[in-house]
Length: 254
Image 1 (cartoon, rainbow, N blue to C red):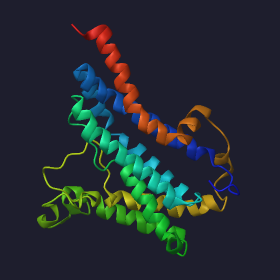
Image 2 (cartoon, rainbow, N blue to C red; image 1 turned 90 degrees about the vertical axis):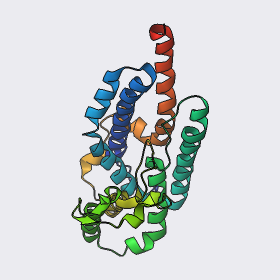
Image 3 (cartoon, rainbow, N blue to C red; image 1 turned 135 degrees about the horizontal axis):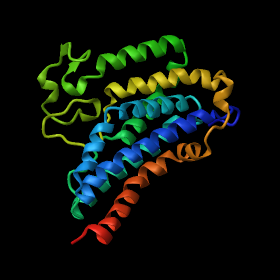
Image 4 (cartoon, helix red, strand yellow; image 1 turned 180 degrees about the vertical axis):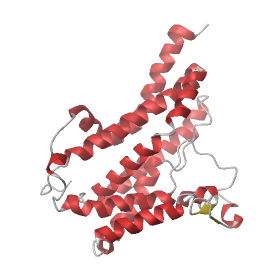
């Protein structure tokens, strides 16, 4: 964050909460994958109903921070680069080790990195837009494009032409064919608009106009996770896999 802007502790804590929720969610999936226990998949599927809430928190906060960063484009390049490393590991290295089906081609890091770069480039224009109008327009556009990956607009009311879904070249935008699979997938449509919602909301953060209680510390543990969210995201699956595999070797292997 810019030095002249007071740190909004609540943003770090909410981001930490979102990352912690993601780690718990993924742990149950890995229990199914590594330990072969069906209840892991069952709990994972049950938690899928609330997981979008944490996605929204994480993406909106990232958008807010785009107003507080010294160089949003540079941060975006770093995050996008981390996403490409994830693709290399999951699509190339893990299959060589016998873990197939977990390939990530455009996950949360790819999406956030791309959103940061686009928002950073558009920031001079975004600053000229009234933040309330910007948030309203972003919310409407998010709703319009939410079902793009289901081949429609407005939650299925407006079907899109099949020609958009014949290849995977437009996969980052949400258009892909039936052969596409990504274990983690966040298309720019609609998530870019949720990020922009946060960017417009970030105008008030940059002006120091958030409520006073948001600047106070409430949870040092969640704040620590939030401040180091990229490292937690990059490392969590490796750590979970290692711990579960050790459990498998010690207790479950015949």
